Length: 171
Image (cartoon, rainbow, N blue to C red; front, top):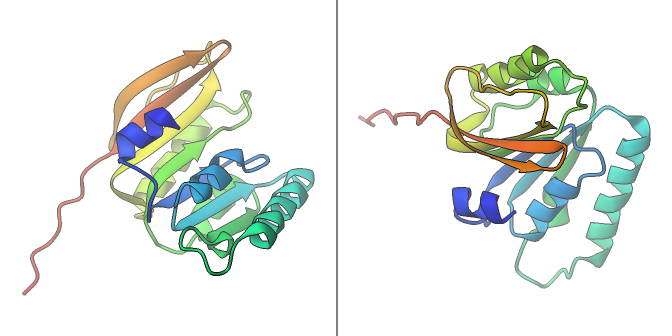
């Protein structure tokens, strides 16, 4: 999270997409740090049950009078990532984290990022992070600039930034 914080400047008010969310650790941590909206995408029914339980616990523990992130801003999408990307409402995400199964082909994962880009689901200069096995090379698809990579034993996290989207002048 320190690397992500450095890259995005903080979590207050951002929109986060956690693909292959597993138990939701990344997305729920982003919520606890002030993310405005978090979407957790997971296809495993066992993991989805745990995700929903974790979100319910977050809701139960929330202080209704306190300022800060609301657990209601967390949405669990129980489907395959490819289907979720095709069906998500067109609202851009500032941070996208993906931790797919290590046996997922890099080309299949690149197709997911192509879909996010093509559907306008990446905010201008959105930060993206992908965790993969260190032995599996990763290259960002077109429109995503590589920033850095950090190796943690058998895992490596690759960081990238979406292309800047020029704003059109208002008449």
